[in-house]
Image 1 (cartoon, rainbow, N blue to C red):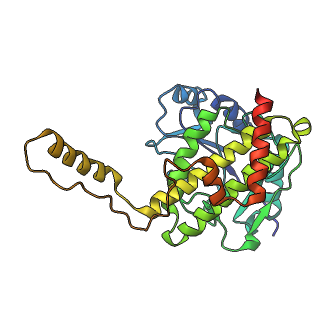
Image 2 (tube, rainbow, N blue to C red):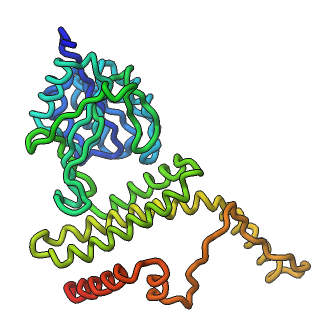
Length: 339
């Protein structure tokens, strides 16, 4: 359906303590968006002052702080007024051609769509990596219709359409994409994904936990195997692969750890309090001794690795022989290389 008037777009930027990056994002947004809205999670740095320096060109909305992945998306939608909403963060810089393509697509068939996927060129620790399991280009439904798209607070599934036919995608080219400049430091990744992983585990149905624990562990092992293969390709791919693959393993095994904790459903804090009280009573008072409490878990724990079990025994227990030998050989090569 041909739209007679180009739909208006609200540029929505969710931030917390982004004084170092927000000005560049706002400088480009005010040149093309019909409305620029900054939703500020109660920043305590200079973010507010920077927003106020733009005057009426942006709308600055302050909301209570929420950890990564726990934002109320409907509140964000309600802060805007245009028909279409372009979601962004302070780590994402769109190209001019991408913005033009968004405008053209909305002009051509905006009335037939609920959301549009936008190509995103991903950087991590300053490197865009086009090899292995690391996709150098991903896509995300950044452009969302305010009333027709379904909005839910669910990691990896925040936006959806009423029907697949009401979804479109903008094709990636080098000059038509969002440059996603993620994680300048390892500490930043650990902090951010520590929050994401906890929320994702909380949102995962109990019936899916066993399957996902196996899946995360399997993917982590696959990444480890691919690290070993890429070690031989170091001259052609450079050394960036090591940090990227280690990051993916931390994310997979971290999720596995959170899923395990949820399936276990043990109140360890309460147990420690009870155990501390019992030890205090038994060891440091003259009162009659009491039995030490036992940790109550909802599921039967799998056998654990005892302190006498060597890493070689653990590897033999969980990894195929061929993969185990490959990993041992490649890791020895890595140690030699770093020396």
